[in-house]
Amino acid sequence: MRSYPLVLAAALLLGAVHLASADNDMSPATPNDKVDNTGINTRDRNSGMATPTDQSSSQADTDVTANIRKAIIADDTLSVDAKNVKIITANGQVTLRGPVKSRIERKKIFSIAKQNAANNKVVNDLEIVTP
Image (cartoon, rainbow, N blue to C red; front, side, top):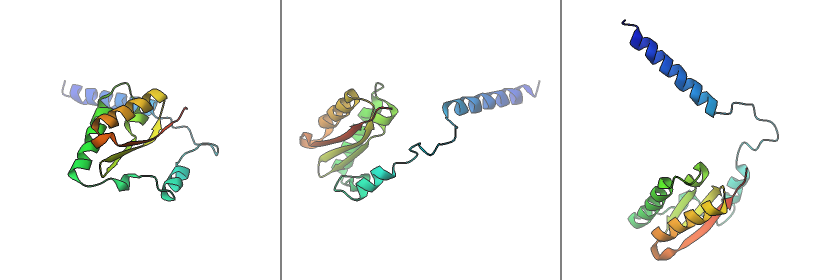
C-alpha cells in the first residue's frame, strides 16, 4: 500500500514525458531547413529598423509596451507567433515587428497597439508568414 503513491507519481511523470515528446518534432534537420533567422538578424543590424534594444526605459513607454503585451496575450484568437511579436516603445511611438499568420492577426495587433499608444503613433512592421 505504501508504494501506491510512488507508482502513481511514476505513471504521471511518464505520461508528462510522453506528452512533451509528442509535441516536439524531433526529426533531424535537413540542409534545406531554415533553422535560424540569421538573415533577419543581419537585416536588423544593418538597418534603421527598431529592435528590442531600442525600447525606452521611461515609465510611460514601458507601461505602453506592457499594456499592449497584456492585451495581445489575453486574445485567445491569436497564434503563438502573434503573441510573441516584438513591441518596442520609444518616445511614445510604438513599433511592431515579427511574424504573424494572417492579415487578421496583423490588423488585430495593430488595433490593440493603437488603442494603447500615446497619440496613436504606431509603426506596423508585422510580417505575414504562411507555413
